[in-house]
Length: 328
Image 1 (cartoon, rainbow, N blue to C red):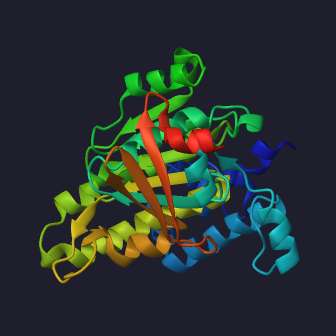
Image 2 (tube, rainbow, N blue to C red; image 1 turned 30 degrees about the vertical axis):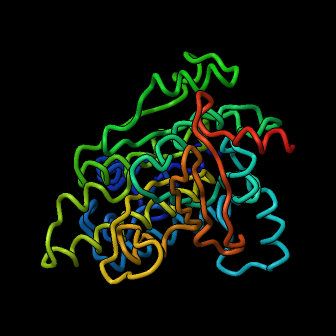
């Protein structure tokens, strides 16, 4: 039996043809999708009690453990270290930024980029869509990308320029990027629920969401809507993180900033989304402008040091400043 057959929904106990059809209608097509879905989504899709939905979700995760797609509930730390050594990384295009990230953007994790307008968030995302397609010996993963665009910032001509500057055929690069334009928060959530259909073949290693919180900020205005906004955002961000872990891909999200009125000294910029986004992001990078350069600071990471790296924007997308290049 092939792995695709083993990931069929009907291979799970309690999932018959009728249940499978209901799950398909909700955008859940494989055991991988079922493992990344929230219990409430499953319960709503097939009209069952939440406790039964949790049980079904656990069955899906158990199957993935058996297939070695997920780690078991309890694992030896030495085994976990060995598994983490197999994690792949995507070069950002800047050696300085790669060094800050410990080698590049990690798979099996979610990296958040936040900063003011023009700080380079979307430029990094465009560059990553190109560099992920590089051969592994050049810092890529020889794979495609999915770009979820919530603010109309994706520019194929910019991707083509970066690809050409890096010696890759623009048409070939563009053909390996799937773009989804999200028009509101509900549409954004639907697109992420449908990601499994694109990720299942295994030829995609990067999902970009630019930006994660924009629609929620625009649609949920005022303190009276804050609780609902944060609840939906929390559910959405956790699903993204589960997708990164189950499919072993890199998820990169951008975020806006807002000024903190109670800050009297230092930088008043704070990422939007509050603790919900902060707790779900594996790594958080704060980007800011410094003349013609851009500075990235590692703000939150399980193991990286909190330090900074300098990079620039040019025809290659993200690159190192000339003086840094000469120093190497």
